[in-house]
Length: 258
Image 1 (cartoon, rainbow, N blue to C red):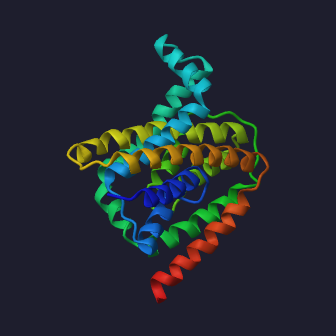
Image 2 (image 1 turned 180 degrees about the vertical axis):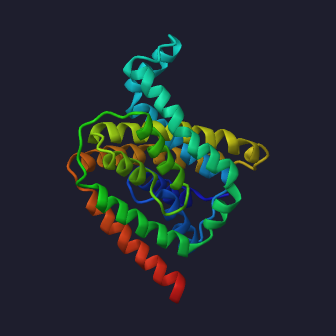
């Protein structure tokens, strides 16, 4: 089991990188390789629960409105349609997660794959930054953003970066692209959590590191989510693109030549 210090380090990495467009999975692979940190599944699971709580809190009004629309069977209102778009957009990641799970898991031990994926993320962020539009999301948009989320299962590909960028490239307005990206993440995180519960049922639990890590990931995750919102509104994606490019290149050089 991880120590308190290791739990705090991992929680800060998770909280910062889960929402910022720099790939949390890629950074966790890097942390495991260079810091020797290899947290058990139950700890990783609770960090994701913490980030899920952040999404539900930040978008609580929209989430409640969606639930009210679903309770009424109202799929014609804006919130009812949004629920449908989230459902449709969630299909690709379910299929990829089920069909390609073993292949994806192999990539989590490859620094080379992470380096290439980070460079890919950097390119997408740069391309999408100035693609401004003002349209609302539609069915085709939800499918394409959902496909982007599925691709982001690859460690080093940023989920938030790819999904928000996909929305911007479709000329969706910035606020809608931001909101849909993170609402779409909730079913994915919840589904992964439920799917992995069977693997932690018999785990030897130490509560202190788990609780500390979950709380810290929630606090840091909230701050990073609000920071990303400001970055998107001010069209500063390029800052994270440069970061991903530098880290990706460094990781790639290390994995190939050192």
